[in-house]
Amino acid sequence: MRERLKVDLSEEVINYLLLPALEAEQKRSFTNIMDINKGHLLMLISNGIVTREDGQKIMEALDEISQKGASSLELDPKLEELYFNIEAALIKIVGVEVGGQLHTGRSRNDLYATLARMNSRESLLNICEQIIKLREEIIKIAENTLYTVLTGYTHMQPAEPVTLAHYLSAILSALERDYKRFIQSFNQTNISPLGAGAMASTSFNIDRSETSQLLGFNNAMANSIDGVASRDYVLEALSAMNILMNNLSRFSHDLYIWSTDEFGIVEVGDSVAASSSIMPQKKNPITLEHIKAKSGHVIAALVSATSCLKNTSYGHSRDATESFKYLWDAFYEVDSCLHLMTVTIKTLKFNEEKMFIRSLENFSTVTELANTIVREANISFREAHQVIGYLVSEMIDKKIPVSKINSEIVKDISKLVLGREIILSKEGIQKALDPIHNVESKNTSGGPAPEEVKKQLQKLNEVFKQDKEWLNEHQGIFQYKKQQLSKVQV
Image: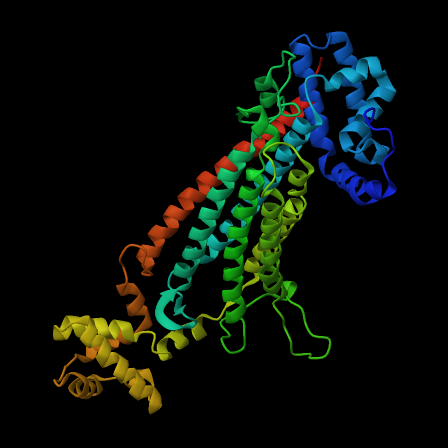
């Protein structure tokens, strides 16, 4: 393989480039590279490029290597990569005249481009599976909290009453979009470069559609240069992961804030918390902290891959290979965070009484009081806003609770602000300031009224079931393809 080169590889190249990559590939890629070998061999046999007799010998040797497993493969870093170590093991069993035929009609460029896509698609499906599990747990909580009133916040200040189900419906909507991005990323990834060769395909009469079908790809890539050069699917996967992690981080941040003593409206379970080495009262929601922090690692992976690829020629190069460096770490981090988020969600305890009292006392209901003034006094909302804004300021300054708002106060403030008295009914004020009635009145599409949130959850559930079916279908396809390759007869 190094016939063109007259000097052996330096120890530095071996120790700092080849050996670490080789050991990582051995753990990550052995099964998939053996499937590629088998799929390519079957195609060579069916197209008369390798005889059935030689093909059977190669297949039996590949089965022997597969059965022994990755750990039994003796690695020689001087052979540079995993494939050449497997080829050396193959040739040791059947000889170079037979074993040397396996690499006919392909290059390590298209082989490793195919391998990277196979590894990536498995990781993408795994993330899809974990998103499904997380969505399922959130849906359970949302369906049981349709009437659990919660203060909604903007700028981290009390805004208007909503329900916990309404908030969780928002999180589910974000996760639904995340899932769609991973489906798109999967479809962009699941295209076979095998047969692209080094970059100019091959003069052998290969059938790329056959290997594509055998290995579970949707189809073969249309251009051989693109087959070995394209890495945008890596950036797309990392982008999808980055957006997902951003959503998880924001969700974690809300739960994190709500779990503080100052809020005290949610508590994580002991199984996902840690204590202090010195302060015995501490219960720290560590999973939420790690999820927030790990989102930064995925941002770094996206920046790293983008930086590696920019200003590289559109062909194969080791620069492009370096773009994978943190892809696998990112897959691991995202998978870890989805597991952590799901197990944390299962343990959450919400203080519903405190949520309700908070929404009753923090002036978050007074927007509806302004709406009531518009309806009952027939004035513009801007004027009503001025009255209520002044009213709240006065009450906070004088430490008067929101429950003390009555028609007399509204009359006096409106006279002061607008120059005329506004008379509201006692019933109108009470309804406006009641968090439950407040929420139930917001029954426009997308609003927090329980009946409206039921509709939101129904739609979310429908899409959830479709997404779950898509996942099951594709997991089944790959399981079937792997079983077929493991039992193949030449």
